[in-house]
Length: 316
Image (cartoon, rainbow, N blue to C red):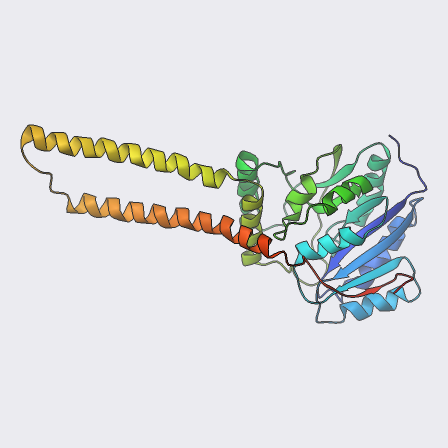
């Protein structure tokens, strides 16, 4: 169904210590969106910044009613900040976008055109990852391969949070209230009619990435654990195979004693088996621990985020 051209567009923008990027972002957004015949607004969610990010946004919002700001009570992480943005974005279409301009606003008109043509979700797919380091490119390739092989939800490869989402999809995403938020999986889980537009991602203008190696590893583990139970089932297969070979080996030892009348000296083989089994048990307990930690966090039912203040609403 073709979308009505009088509908509204909201940009959902999580920010954390981005004081130097706010002006450039808003300048480029105004330039791009002024050519779109839609009512638009920008919803910033500050994730506990300790620089002048909030003050910069409020300064621009003073004479621009299209800018809205939610300030979280502390740093909850980008996934929680993006959740807060989607919970409060009231547009007919919502576009999560980073403030560093690596998600090019120039792509938005193409995304809107595809949405008006009937798509419910419009992915912005990176044409290549030349801007990433060798390690990040290959680790991302391995992660997507694993998710495609064992995940319950297929993730679009080389697609980040930058995408256009129809309101009915946003409402579906709001129903997902799990505490361990892997937003790439959550955004892909509802399904609906999806198309993609390709782009080349530019380098970051200022500042540096907020997610380091540890955060990326944690995010990958959360994704694998949240959207697949295969790691648990694998240990049923591994345990069965080890038990089978152990039974065969035991049978061979018993028969060798009965037939040849001698025991098999095997200190080295015994230690190898003990150490191997010990390592396998610790690894399996670690995987069980990952799933148990997810259950532990979920059953406490803590809020995903807390709001300190909300600017830009008539009632605030």
